[in-house]
Length: 434
Ligand SMILES: [Mg+2]
Image (cartoon, rainbow, N blue to C red; front, side, top):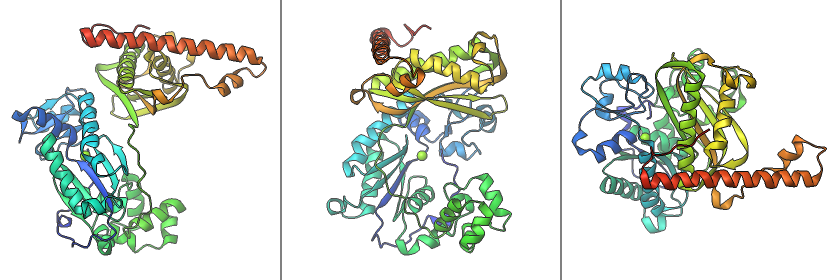
């Protein structure tokens, strides 16, 4: 859920010259909350918050709930205090992902295949090749908005501009349920009416740094020379980016990318815990959940990452690349335990320890670097094996490779059998043992 600043005055008619404005940024409005309202019409018009329990964090809030000052990443217990009559619901990521998949497939892909998916509810679209058929970028935006509302009972906002930066800022300011087209001639003016944080990528620390230089708005930023921006940021690259952004310029292309970036699972503990077994069994549950999703969608993951949130709500992540891509929980889980120990600053031998170095509030993991299983042969990388034992003879390497391949296949077979059992008797009937 976006917390980017919006300016009411920016939501106006900026003119109708669409020449060169071939980049659309589409962003669902309060996506998770809207989907819950769509399947529970009785919640319409009420404050709906996704993220329930006094131990979790808000991951989405309907616009009605935002009026109570509720924001993403706020502790749910605090949100509950701010809005005691709110409807608090658990995160149902599987449902949100499934709906996202349908919207991209059934609506967005009808326009063009030049779609860069940024997240489950957000994408850029390059419509330059679709204008002959569709007429104008705003006709495309209007059709998308109409279809999304009609088919799924949720709304989205659309920004139209000549580049990704201005298109994104336009959709942010069009929210909720709006569309803004910014003609090329007005890009600079539009951008320069924003506060610093209105530029995607300017976070609290860069904002503070710029403030110290007397720069308090994008208009101030536009008055800085490239040299002083370099001095202020300490980086030629950021200086160049800021210099361009302050003028509404951006030369990043829309890179078609539809594959999901990661699949993850996480849960908050009933009470903060330092118990190694409890945290490990949570990670095991997450691995099982993620591996099941991977297999269902035909993906293999190349990378694994562990996420921990601590009692003070700060969080840490640590990831690594796997020797060979996998969709098996039995491969993901030992990696997660290992990463957990690294994050805790504990030695690998302490895998049998009773207690972790510090208490955690939430544990989870995600799999990324997703590739389609049917396009990827499951085999360990020969490079890794060779590196491991340089002196080893070639046949030995081949034998080990074949052995690992058989092992990986067997593990996949076992977990695929688990999927079948679950499909027949329900998700909780069987779980993978360690
Ligand atoms: Mg959104």
